[in-house]
Length: 288
Image (cartoon, rainbow, N blue to C red; front, side, top):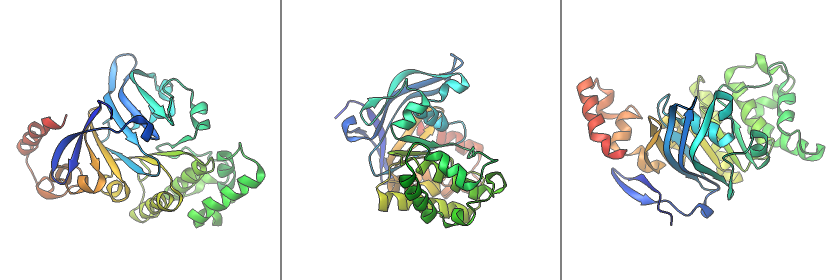
């Protein structure tokens, strides 16, 4: 066991639990601090883990630091004048904190960024092929078939220009393109953003299937806590650059504070006043 501690939720109670040794985790982030422009602290002393074959959700409001974590994991902080000032990111037993993005992808950690970022002038088929450009033709064909089985709609639109697809279809292409590299860890940044509920259902169903039938490991960054907790095994909640709560997804989903302030259930969704919100902020100080 390590000496690192998290705030863990079991039922409605919160307790401190020791984190398992890093050798048992596919991804281990320890005491991470990220700053932008050498002055703006975006993430402070964050520790989290992803075990093989699990879906781990990273939840919180916009600006909580979730996407910064993914950028650090993917090695792209430098594109926004961000840097890791302290802490470590270990993937499959190797510290990847200072590796360039292409080397991180080569080690099997692949991100689906917020906003899809497809090659808009290319077809669906061409975008998918770009994701598997390092493998031979036989393996490429097998992976294409695998993606088309997950997303039958993409097979129907394989020759369509990606830039003309709906937002949901573009998100399917983005996930499919990432899967073409056969990642050891798939990281998704806000996959439900701007999508209709039916499309979100379809994409999250695929994520659950990838874990249950293919043993996939997934780090899911989401603002939609309700959707994420439905499919996750474990989850972390961030506020103001810090992890304030973590635990098994079902325990978090049934926690009173999480219900009120992240799932929109309970008293907080019934016209609670700002005074009550301030009271909650005082009451939750023990979480941080």
